Length: 410
Image 1 (cartoon, one colour):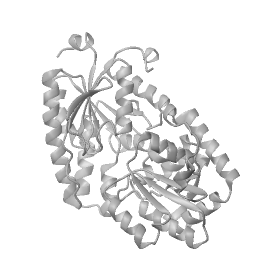
Image 2 (cartoon, rainbow, N blue to C red):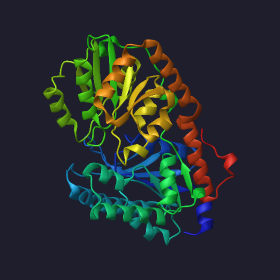
Image 3 (cartoon, helix red, strand yellow):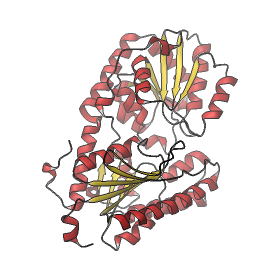
Image 4 (cartoon, rainbow, N blue to C red):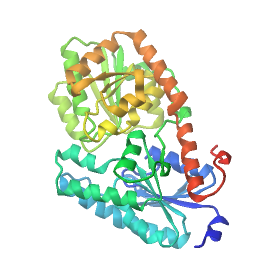
C-alpha cells in the first residue's frame, strides 16, 4: 500500500478497544462518529456486550467487529489472562479487516498496553500507530494491589513500548500528556489532549420526576463504574455517617455497574441503608436524564491514589453538564475539571464527605450557584465540540490530509 494509493481513497482507521463494548464506550463511540463525519472510514474492534448475539455489524456508518468478552476474574494473574485473551482476539479480527480493506492507522485505546506488538507488523506496511491513552495501567495495578513488584514493572515496560511504537499520542488530560512526555519520551507536538467531554445536546436538564426521590424530599446520585478503585464503598459509609448525624428526607441512587456491584449491595445491607439507597444497574439514556434532572447533588467518591489523582472522571463533567453541584475527594484532575462547581474533601474522609453533603443539601442557593458554574465551564471549555475539533486536527496533521483550518467536523 503506497502513498498514492492511500491518498486516492478514504483514509481508513481501525480503533482497538478492550475495556468496554462499543457503542457503550461513549468516548470511543464519539471519537468514531467525529472521525466518520470528518471524512474518515472507521472500523472498531471491541468485546461484545454480554447480551449481544451479533458479533459484526455496521452502526451509524461505522464497521464494528466484536468478540466474546473475557470472563471477570480477580487477582494479579487476571491482568495477564485478560491481556492475552484480548491480544489474540484482536489480532485475529485485525487480520480479517486487513483482508477486507487495507487500513492506514491502528488507533489503540488502553487498557491493555499490548496492542503495540500487533501494530509493529503493520507499521512495516506503512500503517501508522496511535496510542489513545485512557488509563495508566501501572498506576491502576499499584492502586489495586498496593505494590510495585515484577508485574508493576512489566506494565511500565508495556506502556513504554506503546509510546515508543506510537506515531502520535492522544491524552485525556494535561496530566496524561505530561506522562507521555516525561515517561514516554514523546515530543509535546506529538501529543494531543482530547478530553472526554459531554455532547451538550445529550445533557440538557429536563423536568424533575418526583417518583425517583422514592418518597423523600431530595435525591443524591452516583453515576459511574463500580470497581474496586471507584470508591463507592466510601460513599456508602459517608451516607451512613450523614444519616447518623441527622440527615433526613434524602434518597441516594447509585447508577452503573461493575465487578464490585454484588459486594456493594451486601455492604448497603450491612450498613442498614437498604431503605435509603437504591442501585439501578446500567440504565438507558432517557432514564439517566430523568435521574440527573431530578437530583439535587452528585458525588464523586474516587479515593486519592496514583491512578485517580491524575485521571479525569467522566461522572464529574456529566454532573456539571446537568447543572448538578458535586462533592468530590480532593484529586488533582478533579479540581482541574470542576473548579468551583464542587466541594472538595481532603484525606478521603468519609465523615468529611458526609459533612459536605449535609452542608450542600441544606443550602439550595449555594447548590444553584455551583450548578450554574459547572454548566458554564462545560459550555465554555469542556464540551465534546472542543475535543472533537482537536481530534480531527490531530488526524489531519498525522495523515497530511487538509490544512487544519479546513477540517470538517460537523
